[in-house]
Length: 160
View 1: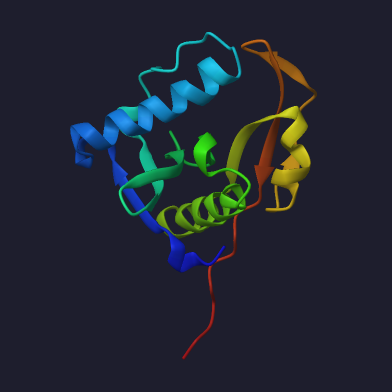
View 2: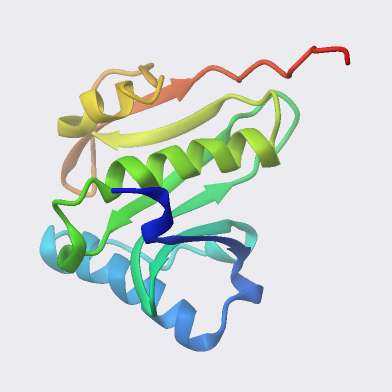
């Protein structure tokens, strides 16, 4: 899929319209709670302080991820709530979403490592983006997960 097929949007929750926020939360609930039959507190209080990365085609939200800034110096930025709309799967949007999420983290939080909690069956997917497993498997909301970390991208030291 070419990068021109979708629009990348990165903004805070307050900058989302009510309709955009509804579409984002609905997609996450449809996938994480309903499809994965995993009743858990999707509305966890972290959205208001996060950046929301969305991939949009036309008027349709096709994928999204949440970026949570480091809480203190030395902490990683966290990518979470990585989701592709069920209606748009099979088009490598997950790859596009992760490329955009890593790029947004590197741009917004330069020289900061990136962490995520991955469903265990997706560890190879995230490894392809430079993440390494940093924990044993653990059960989170009834699904096996592992913690993963991507080292900080070095800042460019080119002198023009």
